[in-house]
Length: 118
Image 1 (cartoon, rainbow, N blue to C red):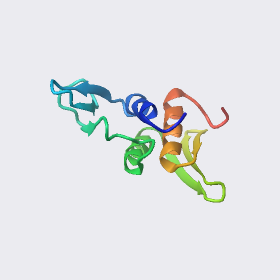
Image 2: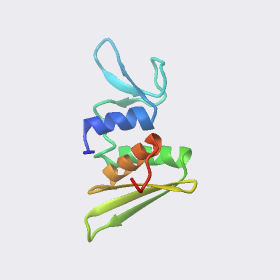
Image 3: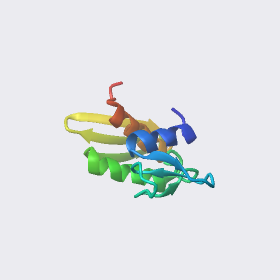
């Protein structure tokens, strides 16, 4: 999967557990529950974990709190990044040309039940 709005929306919904909200002025945000005042308040246009490392780090923090051990490795000679999550005895990995994308791919595999062998 490529970096961009579609992947960012999947991360917000499936990983972070956020729901999309819009007010009467068409201002959109992601909310952590169904309330009108979200705990996490992030502009929908500004939450870009697949391309923005600070947003991707919110995903890392979520993984660390909810899944298990994590490891981010850079392979500069290959111009690839590996992001690994250890979930019990399972290794779940994302590999991509950028660290944010690698993080998002691994996170999505974690919630969808994928593993490094797929």
